[in-house]
Length: 307
Image: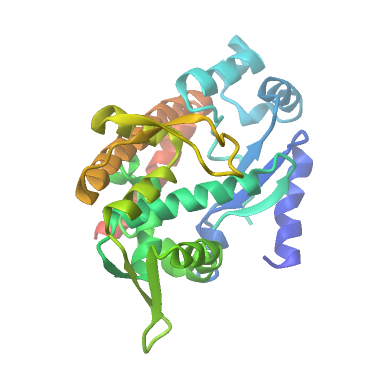
């Protein structure tokens, strides 16, 4: 990101209480974006949401629906985000109008993100055939976030995944290159360049590799898969692992197809429930008028993609 653009984005943080993590994303940041009216999305991370919202209410009361401010203040705002939503307070119009870019990170989110990147790659590989292109891989990774998302039925551009991947192909490549190299070194896959810049990938779809890919998935997904497919306790033999020497549950996998189908169902349910909870939380957080305005804008974009 250019220094001038970064400074412009960071300047928004002067208008809110101190945050320990901040990243930005949105179509307006895409190199090929022509719509300068598109919004930039901010994700702010704090260790004490109650205290942060208390301070922000004094600085920016208009960030919140009036009923939240009047009936419960910071405590109610936090409860709505935690108990109804997924721990996120959402406001679609607290946006700096002028790919994810991390601006502030005092919580070591970048290190956590590397775990997420490996998990996303593993999940995408489980859903892909034995041979595919690099663009196919990045599209599958990107689609994981929308699998089961209720908004995709009526309020999202049907070409959203394709546009994201094509607009940020180089970013996807740089983010996942280390993990592709790792998996290639472990003989999970092979990457070969064709006559164009597009790389072709072939992967080992055997059971041992499938089990290794499943083991890289988030614990919440593995636990749900274990309930459906069965699981057994094994001793973690990875010397550098945090749980080395401890007993862990391993999903019992009969075939690649079985693992792929089960993981897809689990992931779809998690995303669907989370998106529904966050939609309700967002409606309560911003109020009916703002929510209707935001939804109308999203549906208008979705309609354009279908016509």
